[in-house]
Amino acid sequence: MTRLAIPPDIRFGVGGFPLAFTERPEAKDRGAVFAWLRSVGLDAIELQMTYGPRMTAEQGRRYRALAIADDIKLSIHGSYYIVLASPDPAKVLRSVDTLLRTYEQADILGAREIVLHPGSLYGAPEADVSRRFAENLERFMAQLGKTDISLMIETAGK
Image (tube, rainbow, N blue to C red; front, side, top):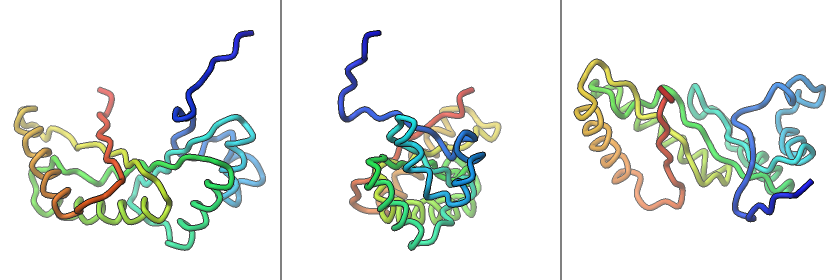
């Protein structure tokens, strides 16, 4: 069998905690996922913050140390409640707050990528929604300031 030569900057991992891990006894300590990933030949995980950044700073620092020890690259999938494409100004303000807290969490974890969905079309033309998303994102980035954490925009796959 021929082995594939994989460049060192390419990582293979999972999004969230896979069932193959969570069904194991050691999964009671979610921090054990990093050693488990390494044991099955993976070296990355996207931490799912579906309901927002709820991890304590202490837990974030612990995960960072464990990830470094096992050479696991961390990224974050931001909350589905972040909807910068929303026509509702109050929802956009809440989204900005949640995204700022997600950046703080990413910094604590040592994650350098945050994945985010822009939001739905809300029955509006795609061009209008794209413009609204871009404008809200531009305002957010100005508020955030300089950062080395990348924001990766992901579609819903439809």
